[in-house]
Image (cartoon, rainbow, N blue to C red; front, side, top):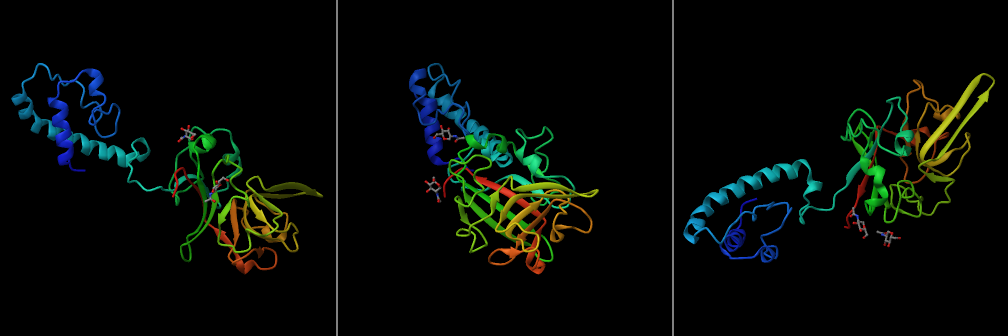
Length: 290
Ligand SMILES: *[C@@H]1O[C@H](CO)[C@@H](O)[C@H](O)[C@H]1NC(C)=O
Ligand SMILES: *[C@@H]1O[C@H](CO)[C@@H](O)[C@H](O)[C@H]1NC(C)=O
């Protein structure tokens, strides 16, 4: 960011003017706590320093300002939220991430009241473990406008499927609903009579003799609930779900993020070729309009 002619003129006005403290605060260049000028205007004693000398100092001061702006640009790049600029577009921010097959449940992390002290640790979408941002703790105060669930499959080809929800007035669980659905890869979802459409989903333990059968389906968007013909769009199998034959895995690893690769719901039990397995499911929010 180069210093502009306009800024130099403003700076000269600030330096040269004989102003009371109250007048100074109304000057365009006097912005206490502002991102780009900081406390630059304070300490200028217009009453005791001669005009010539102040003009001579201007060049040195300009160099200081440029150095400071360079520092600020580095800081802004590291932490854009602390110093938003009007021209920054309304961007998605990662707040939660589920990684498949890491043998750690995702739903307890989502539903916890607070983000554990060792989080956030791994905000990269392709990183090793689950991730939860502290934004989830204070969802209701963020004025969330949109929420995006992205399903990533890394191989054989990188594929992404996005489900977008209207986040206006939502809390950390209510945004995930059919009423709030804005768009999805599935043409039939908005008008379908869903059996489940919720983050908490459906979970159940049952004993068969000495065998425990588990299902634990979160971020669950389902049409039917029937092992023999189980249709749905998206489910996170959050433990070693083994209730229905279709959900048993060979290696017992979890979570598994299953979804329909069809333009509509898929029959998990009858049409395994069209059941996708995502490597990562990420949740992003926007807190601005566009
Ligand atoms: C959210 O909106 C309210 C009401 O308009 C406002 O007071 C508050 O500052 C906003 N919060 C954020 C984080 O922008
Ligand atoms: C989101 O929901 C709010 C509140 O119901 C509504 O005013 C707004 O128009 C909706 N936005 C979109 C993009 O559907």
